[in-house]
Length: 488
Image 1: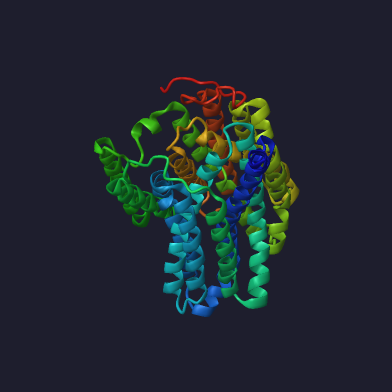
Image 2: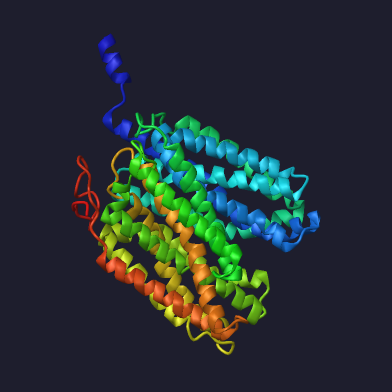
């Protein structure tokens, strides 16, 4: 009788699968909430920036560092955060990142000076890098490679796409009703809840690369080199590449990153094994990610065009971008994963790059006479291509990874995306200024010609994209359209 009772108390296979599925959905919700904080915080602070500037009586150039330092530390620490998750455990790094983000938001809200606020924002960027780099790795470990993982990535992208628009609205409401400090305080309860749920439901596991050590010299050099590189590209967008404030950090970044490669060659436990980057599909996915995000620099130019030339208010400009935002939410979030599952990664990336190229080309004959409806077809086509391309690239960056490589792959593909935008913006503005120093319509047209060229190069790369290598023990039929090949 006791034996029968014991059997009755044991869950059936279907019950265990249901419980695992519910936990997977909860883990997805926790990962989304942490990533949502990063996205919303970026757009929220942009809206609150004028109020912060007025309170501290600082120049706009000084106040811009509130946004700039966040981008620098976030991009710089993605690689080391991803690898630290592989070594010490993704959950541990993820939870520490959420807690660090909440605490630095609290100190930013109470900041008595601009300096303290900027330092707090820098720490926020490091914490955001920890959560961002481990988020995709946690999803990769939670959802099996193929249809389930692609759907999870699609949901994540949909929510994050909505976060940019939601952040702008939320920032305006909070700043108007409670002051800019409330923009920082709102992160605290959300972060506390996300940290509690992550600690409760994400499985406790050692790092899947446990037994190795974190390459400290490699971590220091790659982080320093990436921070210098993003800083140089940010300066290039405003003063060009030939000025000392751009050239000096750019040369330094090249030297430091070269030192990083030399360290990795000799290291017995490298932060980023060079054999991993030499895999053809890894290299191509990251290069394609840089090219695709670089073309997004043209979208920022459209905001300048709408406000500076057509006289749109910030609110009207935001409303003008609702069609592309809706495409990112519905098509990118809910359609990209289905397209990848049905057509395969390579075809989706070819379609994406083709639409991005065509959209940029349609923006070349930009004119005051055509106004908003003159740029609408091009911006919609560009958004359609980018909305399916960006999530597909995130999937491609993690496809075929071996156990212990998820954090490395996640950190690398997201670093490529973070580098692509400032690089593209700097290049497009340099092209525009070369033909039109006053950045008028002629300059915009040449900038979109540059964006078209970037898209065309991305399309060529997508056509040549190698098939994903499937490691031993992975079902080769897991992802439609992706077949195993050897490392090149």
